[in-house]
Length: 354
Image 1 (cartoon, rainbow, N blue to C red):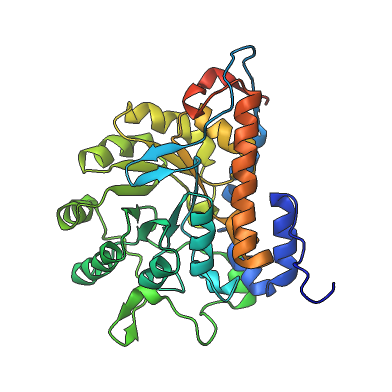
Image 2 (image 1 turned 30 degrees about the vertical axis):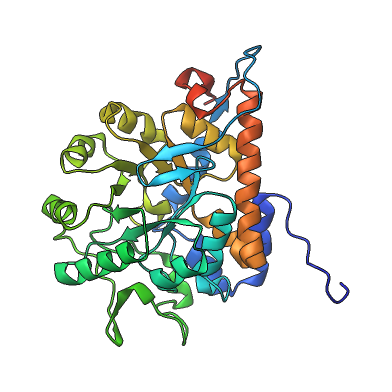
């Protein structure tokens, strides 16, 4: 490579993971890639998409497909959002700043993790054109939780994404094998700052619906509940003021042996009865995966690991490239399915193969 030559980026989302693994410290790769327990759920998320086939319609005269979607926390140029993931500075020195700029370049929404290694104010300042949602773990100390919410509001975040599937932390054996417990020197969870100190992130089994009620009274931001898997939780979520639901099993990183999110999506959508949008994360790797989820009723999907692989392989440019690839694949899949927009998809356009 000659001086001034820009390195070639991988050509597919899968190749980005291979490039990221080659560049990352093995402990950091396994932190991002790993799941809880035997990683049954981690594998199931991707496998569920492989069991589903697309069944296109023909001769519909749909024209060039449009990919834009409207959600309670803003519009996106495509039904692919950036899921909240921690510690982006392990992947690239610019960390969440670079990810936010990549999301803005693609006109989509980034959910900024409470456990990010760049404070929400700095993320917003680095990407003033980005639409940001803030992912929140409700803390037992509600005054501190309110402090964090106020920071997100002041930074211009358009929604709160409240993670509800984490009364305790899942045991991830890859991390244990590396002895990965703390961030390297110089990195910290900047959204947990309390004055000069940095608090520990508390996952508490005491968090309940009353905390969602308090959040609802605390802020006018739309609240997205992330981690809904059981249809029995859908009506209570709506009754307690959720503006949207995110079907998520935490990327297989919390309770192992949960079903794949794609497998639970139709029953969650049915339980919601159109009252609020339903989103999905977990296992989305290609544009065809996005279209399958949309056909089953998702308003949009969120991707986490693929964006991290782009960030690790090529910084901001790599993360932006991953999102651009997914957008192009979604557009192509919609066209080949005879759809003018995601709204034209329906459950009759997918078939289970096994």
